[in-house]
Image 1 (cartoon, helix red, strand yellow):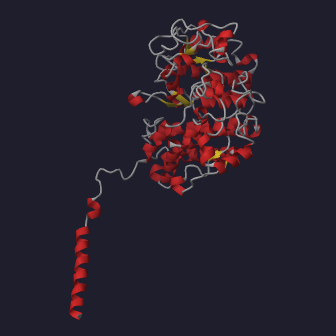
Image 2 (cartoon, one colour):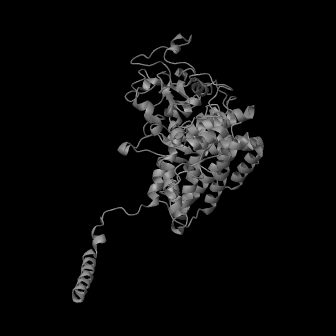
Image 3 (cartoon, helix red, strand yellow):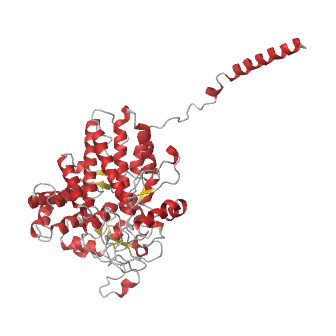
Length: 519
């Protein structure tokens, strides 16, 4: 029996070795040699840049009364801004998808990797840009615990106070700027400045960061003027703000695989005759004989044939669609312009779809023009040196930069100097004839037309231009103006506790609640 047991033991040992021998190389054998085991975080970065929300004409630019869907057809109309319409409410919240998820992943993976330091710092700056979009649109928002489901298993992030997020962004942007290294890694996947050598790329990102910080600082102008002055002065004395249009942060499109301008996709795709430029904006362009107008607006004999016909761009012929009217009530207005000469729609100005409304039109996110106009206001307020003389120089330079942007559009070109000089010398435009803050911020309104979120934020911050009440389903209390978007419906259901706590702290989830800097 003992001999038999010994044989069993020997057999078992032999079997173990045999199995071990058979298993040798088994794991390697079953690996797919073509499988992607690691992902360069640079690719995540370009995806985060491209996926950054760029808004839609029926959102911010409708609130700022530059654009309108004239057809009151329920969920598709600018007349139906409300707290239960995610066609509008959800756009900026979309940054919590691909954009911020990718950025948080990059930051986690590169934080302690000196070979990817510049990528790490750039991701921090672009993350800050996106959180400004979210705070400016909604107020309180997930921040300190956001996008941590994969990294820290936080599935239901709390909403941080909007003022606290801004304070953190100030620190984050400054630290990221300081951390950029002109002799470090070049981020080739960067769609904004990737083609540059590492030194110029880092310089461009430093300029972007300081210009974004100036924008952040100016947001405090109504709620904390001392802080606004401090941050504006800090950005100014950095000597690293954007210094030409070549520093602009732009998404460009080539049409390959439908890589087209997302902002213009809506009005170009379905029933273009619904969509018109709003009366306040067209009136502003006409009253100052603005040479940018021919590239921005035009009238079509057939408002639905925008892709096959050229518009009339003569400025004297342009008429904006009146605020507060729809496709039925407009017909009873005493100065109704009439129905279209052919097809459907009305005789009112639309986007110039060959230029500003093109599918290949660039999207401007942070610009030299905007930066100069912010400096103009800071100088006029005495927050940076130079007073009115410096403010006038910054103001005129900002207008010039905005006019030069027209050359970046398909079918467009920079405005000739003679037209520019004639424009800025008008009493209604010149900063030397009074109404300085109104003029500076009205020019900002024009210059940031394609960047609707910034357009709307600066209008709320500055109070200019002064506009009629926003038309909505029910009259809005207070000043009758939309001051924020309601949170998306799915957030109320999927993260109810955090949502309810934020709404209680803010005083509601209405269109008339205000983010902290909008007082």
